[in-house]
Image (tube, rainbow, N blue to C red; front, side, top):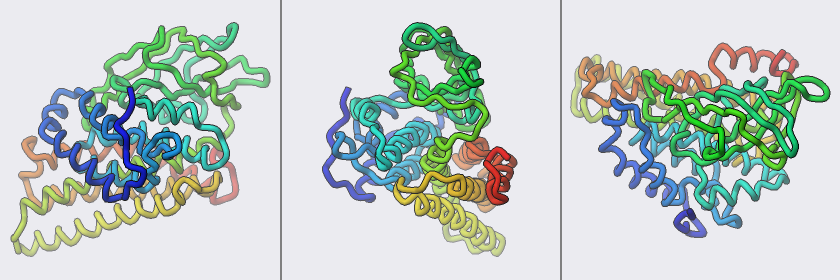
Length: 379
């Protein structure tokens, strides 16, 4: 499958308008999917056919040549219309962004770029794998047999390639982690529908089960010590967190718009005050996300612990601000915002998902504190 050709030059406005058209198409079914918990395969087909799944791939590889910030605006606009699809799509986007960083720093990302341009949708398990990873691997002729349970794996029902890692206890110098890409249709790969949550119900973040899946040596992208901070994660943090929080900012944008529609023209003193507080929270969220993109230097940032720590600090502040924005949107409109018939109620549930992306506040403050005091991120 190939994506629809994109123009050689696309502005940020062009990307937003293209996304808005898709988002408006998806809006009608968002409430139903929130109730059923079913991901929309059609949504991802639209994103792929519109060239958005390959937007970050450089034009010389057949992609859209979008900047890191452009991709953030795509996710923000999508979040205004369809929160679950935006957050699930951010998981694909951040994996592509990581490869763009590698490409900009001299690595060969051609194989993955080609797959994405040909229609591959990438599924990440990094949030649960983190440093030590899980599962197990057995060395066999030509590769490894791996077994693991990977959750959450957002978008796994519509994805094509699982980008994951597995712990290998029998490394020559102690436990190792094998980073690899596994086709989701490979023998031994199954999906257990375990995602039944308060919010983001339609992200399809189920459990991918690997049972004696053969991973050839050629599919292993990195082997590293299992319990030592890997510089790779500095890159992932810098590439991923701005994109992920952009999707949540879009959820907050939608809440602000819905609230202002409901109180338009009102002059009650308490509503005016709440609207001012809403503006403060929303501005803080937007400024923090903008700062994350500015700091990424269009994926040219240096791979340092200090950069990762600063990005994670901004992530925590942004997460607090987007949640506060949606809370204030509900308080501004009153009890109607607390009703299941209001999209504000759904957005309030959905926006809390930002708390659980790497790193949650308590882990983030430890990470940033360790780095600020001159230690490694793990202490």
